[in-house]
Length: 242
Image (tube, rainbow, N blue to C red):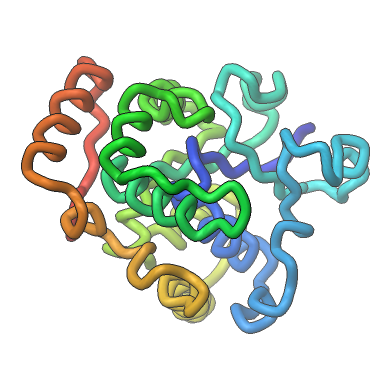
């Protein structure tokens, strides 16, 4: 599938849903209000989902925008060979696990009714049913220098969105002058504000430093220990608050 930017993230709450809207805006020059009215998932189908399916994805006009949560090793060979592009977003794991817990608690069907302590323990032990976050992130981090891979961090979207928009435009081959870049950045700011402050979401679920409101001292110490053990000698670092 040559020429396909593919957006990755180990879990749904790594910021990939927000990233897909930002990428669509940058690549298509769309207005944030228009994106708010469309079903963005129809514009960026998920590679591993049975619907709409691979047959429909193959019929999309190149360059196609496709979303996925698959580990690097399971991605199509075109991506490994550098024929297609991958945009990967990682979020600091403490905020991620809190956001994911809140999401599970909000589900009307099959909602999680256990404690956050148990949910966090499952996350640390790779028992949430989505594989290991630690392995997923490290695998893509190892390929961050590949010419067809752009590794982004969720926290940078909040710290310096303008720079991230510049990176995305350059990576996607979108040419724009200073005025166009400023307009794109302003539109992206609107998207971030809309997504992080949506009334349908638990308050603040998209903010950085969310974990401090729920982690106890002992939980934080345990998490730090597991993080250190599982990340090993990996030099990937995260900002846990801004």
